[in-house]
Every structure is written in C-alpha cells, then in structure tokens.
Image (cartoon, rainbow, N blue to C red; front, side, top):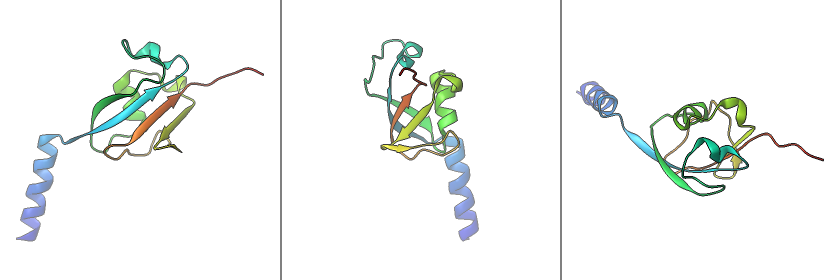
Length: 98
C-alpha cells in the first residue's frame, strides 16, 4: 500500500512538472543576455525542481564560459549543484584589471 502511494506521488510530481522560484541577479555585463534586466537588478524565475547551476544558465541563455562565479545565498555554488526553492542567485563574469 505504501509503495503504491509513493509511486503515485512520484509519478504525479513528474507529470505536473513541479517548479520552484529563484531570485537571480546578474553583474558586470551579463545583463546583456537578459533584455530589460539591469546591472544587479533582482528578478524572479521559475525553474523545474532539481535545476542545477548549469541548467539555470541554459534557461537564461547565458553561455557557461561567460560566468566565472555563481553564488547561492551568498555562498560559492558549482554548476553541478542543485538549487532549492527560494535560493538567491548571483552571477559574475570573469573580470580583469590590475
């Protein structure tokens, strides 16, 4: 009985395509990939549960090569990690100077 209930919930979740919201900010030129978004402006995006950093970049159409650092809730976040609902994400390109 428990197995049938778990299977039903899992299939239902898969078919519904549950999503979650992330708050995203882009900096130092990455805003050029997002028309209407300005430097540091927070915007919300719906992504499927289980979305990784790499998946977010694909959804935003930002080339991975253009992102040097990704933070989630103020901590370094790898492209292969999965987000949690409500995470605050910041994306930074490589910068130079000296």
